[in-house]
Amino acid sequence: MYKHRALGICMLVLCAAGSAIGQPTPNPSSTAPATANQLPRVTILATGGTIAGKANTNSAVGYTSGQASAQDLIDAVPGIEKVATLTAEQISNIGSQDMNDEVWVALAKRINELFAKGDTDGVVITHGTDTMEETAFFLEQVLASDKPVVLVGSMRPSTAISADGPANLYAGVQVASSKEARGRGVLIVLNNTIHESRDATKTHTTSLQTFASPNAGPAGYVDASEVRFVEPVETCKRPRFKAPDKAPLPRVDIIYSHSNMLPDEVSDALKRGCKGIVLAGVGDGNSSKAVVDALSSAAQQGTVVVRSSRVGAGFTVRNAELNDDKLGFIAAQDLNPPKARILLQLLLANGTTDAQRIQAEFTTR
Ligand code: ASP
Image (cartoon, rainbow, N blue to C red; front, top):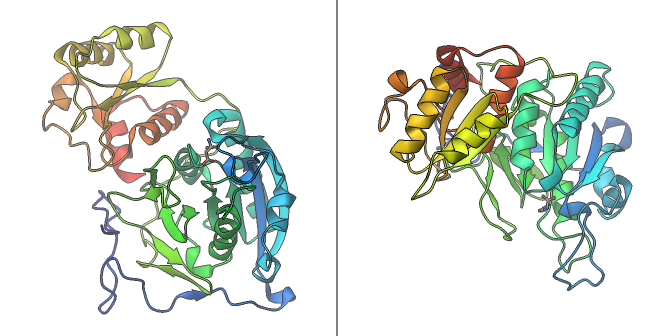
């Protein structure tokens, strides 16, 4: 799979000759140890997750997320102090299944503040993997600086045999310390692989290699000494929102489509007062006739309806299986349902309700 996302105004420029698609670019950014006063300053913001999880015994199946502190995580990584000068802050200590608008707003505020004051060269956020792609995508939309922000987590708790958290944290700090990571938006680093927030998705319940970027391929790779990106930085900058200063964001519900689907989930969502609905549609963002009719009537009455897909790869294509122009829908393109939800929440929070404008934003963000 390739790092070439054919998106509206922001076509990615392919690597120069000699740097084939999917292959690392030459001139990687070295993360070889430097002397203390040359080291980049990296701030670790800890939020919880399995990386901070603990079990009673190191072979236990059950464990509790969000037990270890930010400092515990750093202390478990010998040699990390040679990569960057670290400071650590605890933002929350929760499993990412409980991630919420309050923590997102706090993270965005703190990161914007750190960069604005010039206090740090890069940020690493430790986070559960379940909703990591959502937090990464949210932050991507609202951070003002182009300095590196990297999310790391783990699939095994800190007490497990071969816990993957320490290596992932080390790699995350390498990437956040790398000049090459600048201007690439918010990144996810797991299992020595770097992903962009728009592309990344969790694909496996337990494997260490759980993150993939199905439509674009990984952004790069990390090894013991180097951070390598597969393409140059995008020259065309994507627009950003002003970070929201308070939670919650406007309510947008996701409706998961399946066979024998009845329209009651649409009417229930409307009764709950949602301002938008994202359809996690079958195939190319489709659903039963009854659901499509209910969604279309919701759209005519002012609820914004975005069609995404439950498939996990590919673009949801406008006006293909369904006539979006006629039905009043927005096609989510390559955004999966949770990310489509976040983008719609931010657009609604910023007063954007016009379907045509929202469709354009889904292409350019
Ligand atoms: N449930 C955990 C979480 O997302 C899983 C993990 O971190 O991998 O917090």
